[in-house]
Amino acid sequence: MPLAGLALAAGWPTDAQRTLAAPTQAQVANRFLREILRADYPAAYRRLAPEVQATVRLPTFAAAARPLWQQGQARGPAITLYQIGARLGGEHSRNQWFCRFAFARDSVHRPPPVLLEVTFRDTTARAVLGFGLRRR
Image 1 (cartoon, rainbow, N blue to C red):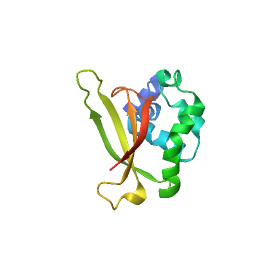
Image 2 (image 1 turned 90 degrees about the vertical axis):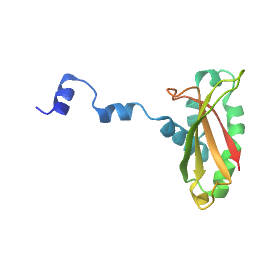
Image 3 (image 1 turned 180 degrees about the horizontal axis):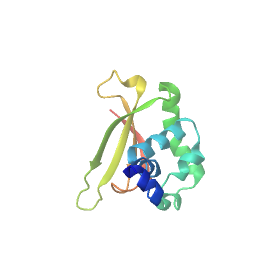
Image 4 (image 1 turned 30 degrees about the horizontal axis):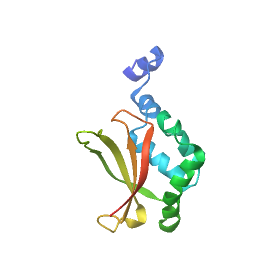
C-alpha cells in the first residue's frame, strides 16, 4: 500500500488536507480583502481577531473598510500579493506581521501608488488584527 493510502486508511490527514485546513496568512489576507472589495463586510468582519471584534462593531468596521472598497471601484477588484514582511517594533511597541497587496491594474507602476495592507498578531495568527491603505 502506498504511504498516502496508509495515511488515509489510518485516518491521518495528508499534506494536501493539512494545506486545505490551514490557509497561509497571505491566503487569509487575500480572502479578507476580496470580501471587502465585494462589500461583503460581514464575511470580512468574521476574519477579524476576537480582540478586535470585541472593541469594533460591524458598522464601524464597514465604515473603516469603505475606503478600500472605493479604491476597488476605481481600480478594479483584482489584487496581487506585493509583499510579506514584519514591521519591527520599538522599545514600547510590538512587532507587526503584514501582507500587502497591489491592485492588478497598478502592476506597471513601481512602486504601486496604493497598497492594501493586512496585519496579524504574529507569524502563526490567521485572524486579522488590522488593515488599511498605504499610499506611496
